[in-house]
Length: 334
Length: 285
Image (cartoon, rainbow over all chains, first blue to last red; front, side, top):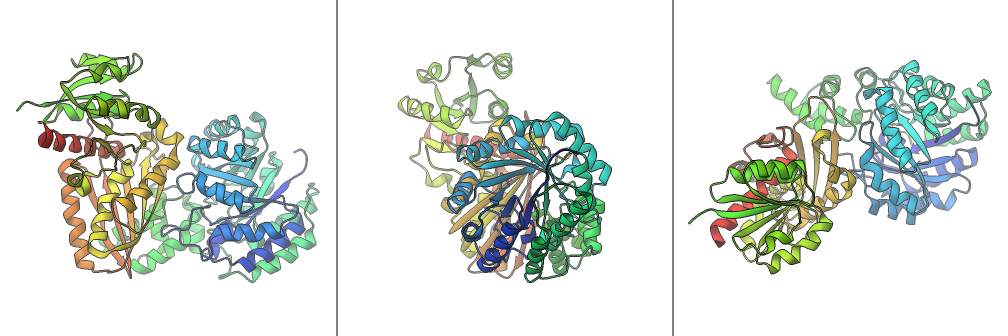
């Protein structure tokens, strides 16, 4: 392990799933200011599925994310204002608008085996002078070797660091370490990690990633995020302090920020049966609330829908298949 | 009347599959395959007994017997080919995103394009979803239509991968201009599962007059229309209603002419292109 660990806050991006994309300008101003003062490196603001994600498939944003980005840019003084972009959902046109609203960093995310669909977006981001991150989702679905091959596509195209996401919260600590350490050993850019807490391992896996050489770690205030949520960032800050791992976070400030985040929460961020199933079956965490809704409409247990999605090998972004599965299961029941 | 001769520019996956589809046609005659380098696709066409050239478009411009030309190259190349083909009096069927001519989706607007000499085939997702979006709009007046296309990673070629924004932007535009939604949005997802998954397409629409029977009837009618030229087109989930929101899910299995059956995305755009060519061959020559 070497050097400083940078914390990336995604309370207003992944956390947006947990509040069904209902953030208001006022909430964003308050949280962005508190996070900026606490010393995080990047503050990510976007629809949960990235800019351009507001849709029937993923849920409409109550306030356009571009407006939220603009509000945040007025209060952020130290951190980089960051957006998420999923090629296939968001476009370069969306990225340019985000830049004009004040975003100066972008994380471009693809399924773990599809890095090459991000090349055009990486190039566009670099041309705008943005801090650019290559982001591989659902990392439990590929071997460490395959992940390295995909990460190299990002590296060749000039990203500033590479982030691995355990989007289903499925990985065990040693599996995180195998993936991170292979990348750290073979890449010349830093490596980061994004955890989900579906199996209760988000903080532990983040610590394991740091031990394996990761230097950027994602987290959210109160763990707010898809499924059982993300790595709880104020808890991680305390853990890093206890472990003596160098970072720029002021623990008191980030604990204050977390108390502010508590006010926006719509439900407790816990590991319920359905979240547990996401982690166990290896299903994309953002499917959770959509599956609960489909389950209610079609009279099917959410757990059964999630298991079937796992069996079918669905990847991030395929929220439409939740309705398909619920419909098919309901037909079978008749 | 004899068959109408066609040429294909671009002997890649799309061009080769088009060749096999044209070979099955009762009204079209596969005649000429054009490339710019010696390649697998050129050799394949030559072996099947067709004329070939590796000098690009110029070798077919003077050939008056060739009436219809499929361009399966790239948007940039088609921008150069389009005026040459027009001047030479040939009908161009553009498989690229160049969009020199109007978008065509055979079962929706082909009969409204009687003077057109350059047809743009939109995108694979557009060919799969615009008909459903159109059927819903005709029945219920769509204020917003959104589609999600999922294709197997193996059937997403380098062209699609290098410019995925073109897919979403072009498809969204066709949902508005061809299908008639006030506003359109398109999403594409690549899935690497093995064995590869069939192409699925979800069409969501927010409508002004949610008449369930009219929408369901219209959708099943248009599905039958598409099945005439894409036999593997299947209604997976018939219209589901949720207030003013309509959801329809479609699956497309390819014909397996040259490409594997899971490449329903490539099959449907090619099948639609051949459908356009056949209609023109019958009506204009």
